[in-house]
Length: 260
Image (cartoon, rainbow, N blue to C red):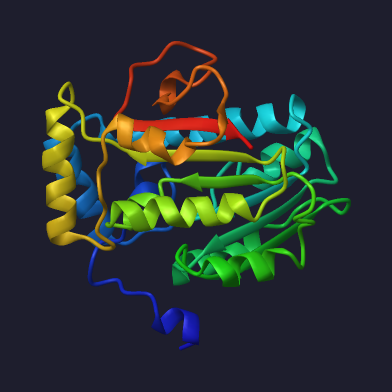
């Protein structure tokens, strides 16, 4: 057994693998599918959040590459590779785009090296690191990205795993402070919302049975991550409502894009 394989715990459901199951992927185990189905019973629409978040990623990356001229992406909390990963979307627009992925999930690491292969003109790298290891991430990313030039910082569904509010805001600020003017923050976050009470019960079930535990925040609290940045329209909204190509129902996953 390799070191990576020894780190994969198949006895407890894991959020990245459940996300993969909900989006139709195959990189999951029976324990993940069972938990995913139980969560769906508590909140039947929750599987749509994963799909909506993935579609938001595609729209945001495409906008940044096409309209903002961004050619560098730092994607932290990558998750399991699937269709239309950040580098695939960006490099379709600009083949010379450079992308650094960061995750600390051993299953993600096992797949990333094989699947996250970019264009010959660009560059795609992967770092095995935790979101909290800001200095490590920035030092390693600087080997691939030019941090004196604009970078898009992608934090989709990852700061939810930092329980303390002030710690989570500080992490995002430190990362953005290290990036050049013209950089962008792309962030999505599960919310608690009075119009979506069954989300709270689904999250409570997850935190009792799954790993890692996640923290919900209000839409206003999610908007705080963009303090000091110029929010792109339509602001911090349900990720399904961020410049949608077709009208879809709101989900309890809020997102925004802000410019430094």
